[in-house]
Image 1: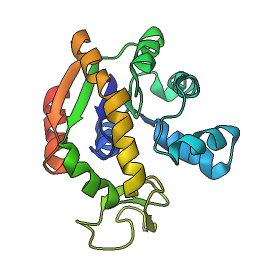
Image 2 (image 1 turned 90 degrees about the horizontal axis):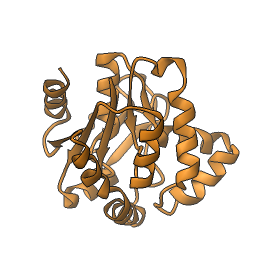
Image 3 (image 1 turned 135 degrees about the horizontal axis):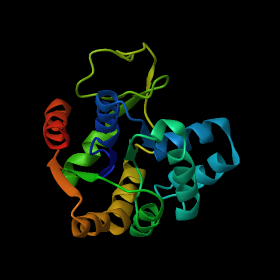
Length: 205
């Protein structure tokens, strides 16, 4: 099962990809995680990505496509995967179709005015990457591994506004692209993550 999860920044892509990965035993391939790892390790890719991510902009197509193509060729993707954060432009989607077949594209719908509050309140475990929101936190450490919770550099209001602008301009057209292929499934995400996952399961099962 080869899946793509679409949605605006803060729509819950990472959370749902993680749950899909665990239930169906397929890897969650996150370009954001790949970039953050390289930024932390200060690799050539990390330096390139940081220049764009810090401004709320997308990393150039060529770099992203090469990373994804290489990752999907690995052994653990042989029986399926779920893509988080890719494709983000129509040109990326067209290139992806040249080297892999996609079974379903799940678009996580949410009102854009709700996203700013979600993103500024988002916290991520510094160890395992689990995502939380301060609105629902009962502790300042990760409930899964005990790691400290931090705010991502790109989760401040100025960068969030730019990310949403880029999403509307470059990424939202993907919805029309995949609708035309017949692969697109829309799911409302203005409810709890648990209910969203139940809706996803009802479709995939």
